[in-house]
Length: 144
Image (cartoon, rainbow, N blue to C red; front, side):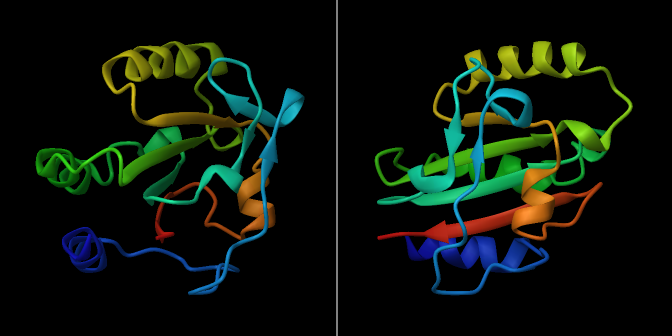
């Protein structure tokens, strides 16, 4: 796991916003009109535990901004029993129609079944965690 943390610390620059090191951030619950899993089920950040999680909060307009980093992580083939990733799409930050984004997310979910794909319809993470809007945020959670 130290390799993940080292790689992430070298390659990630992010806004730490209202999230403090060594503290669990405020729970975010996305359901109904706020968003949720691409399957339509609710999503809660309380699942971020007992593993290392890479958390991506992405404006679809800049989705390719960190491709080099994501390819680097993917190539490492980390043990999924100890590592997982969550990708939250900020649907309120783009002009792209939601149905087009959702269709793309469904394909990605099939190609990357271990990744958790989430829709944020109302910028909930921007407001609750003070993540940067209209951008590509990357956070690393180590909950061992």
